[in-house]
Image 1 (cartoon, rainbow over the protein chains, first blue to last red):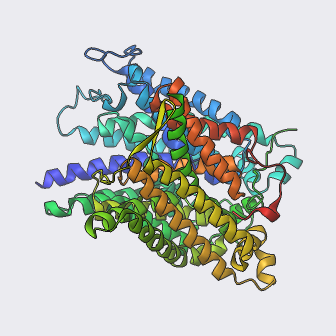
Image 2: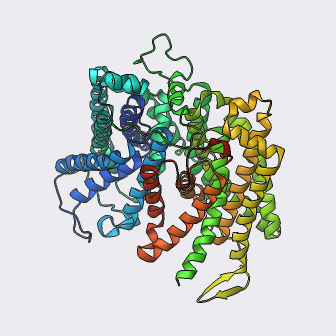
Image 3: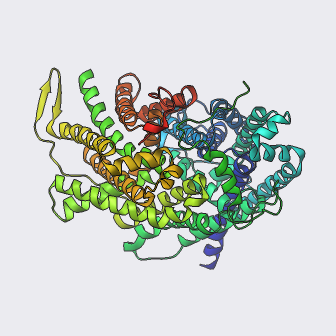
Length: 341
Length: 291
């Protein structure tokens, strides 16, 4: 009994790690880059599906593309393909600002999910694929495997954390935050904002593609419903709860949010309350987001990198300054286009 | 056959227009995209079922009750959830509405379960129009949408409150300075928006089915219609709703029906990239931007 609890907890930690990585990548895009992306789920879907299809054992499956690559090649391939898809999405959408960017990325994610559902010759449609090999599974089989996966997840979180720290402190990161905070000034200083935006968007796509297999290994299957808006909004909530703009905040947010909602599902209840229990993660996610926005809009760990010292953590500074930038658009009925004209 | 598709497109488009008008109105007067608007549709559908099945109300009475109760719920939500964070700006409001969408979605599942439910309503007898046919029920849905839009137009154009709404939509600061009671305007807009969303949800449940996914399934299409219409003008939103309904059902003739939503979002992306001010905008005219 007790070992069952521990294994469940390890599984939850795997999920926490995955969301921590996604939230960190989101922080790169939105927190520092100022690109409020609601299309994460679509890119993760591309990465997850490419990885599974390129590595799966094709016997028993009648699909159009199953080359049976080794795992590492599959992971690398999924990173490259996802980066390419991000590039294709980025070209039209990065010209848009504020909420129009949100809407368009959201729409692209939904289109990708519909394509995955409908192109069943490639993806096996809503049935998905369930026979998924996991790394080192032959060496460490059985129920202890969750620990192996935990090790891989922790290493991935650490790697992404170090990468983000490096990026955050480097001139590149400062440059990024400069056009987030004052695009006109950055342009006046001769920074190529458009190119930098595309670079970050593609880099985020590549990272999402590389970590997408983690999620697949955790679930041990791939179906289109795994890539609904849930995954995007959970990552966003984790980031906002932890503190948008801070890397540690992303990890803390994922730990609190995913740990709490998943832990809740383990409470034993009688059959008549199963509906209520299954609704709890959504309900709590929503309430958490509302409460944080109301009382602590800068999150639990406010951003440390800021160009307005003395202003840090003063109740919603970040979101307010973002909102001010976007506020100019509101009510005008038209997104401003940047572009290099 | 083509005529039949057009009829279905019109029915779908009318409901879409109903669902989107309120969304565009709140966007204009409150200044943010209310992602929870989709969940209002789902709540409306389930409330309709409660009134119709459990309380045994006539379907029209049930519809009226849905509009009224959703209106009250909409105002209550605005006062409790949105008002306290209003000063923090559009993005905090946007994320609050995403949180609200999740909370409502969870609440719907907790209360009504995940089963798909159907309205046992008869659509009445059908009339032949050439090779196609249209039922009484479908005519009522289209007429209902047109009447609502006409009523909304009359309200906005000829009543004092309607004028206030347009004033706030056009310039909230100036409206406040001029002594317009912004709180009343805000309540009115939320009542109309949530009420119409509830009605649209119930109609969707009648022509299809009611499930907790109704909200998430429709919010993007609502966004698409609102953006196509140019999030500002009530008539443009109606036209965009009808157009998108037609495009979606006509596209089913050419490409597999499963791609209907992809077509809708494809149109959305195309409009945003090519003509971001909306399809029907002649130029930016904020003074007529009532809804």
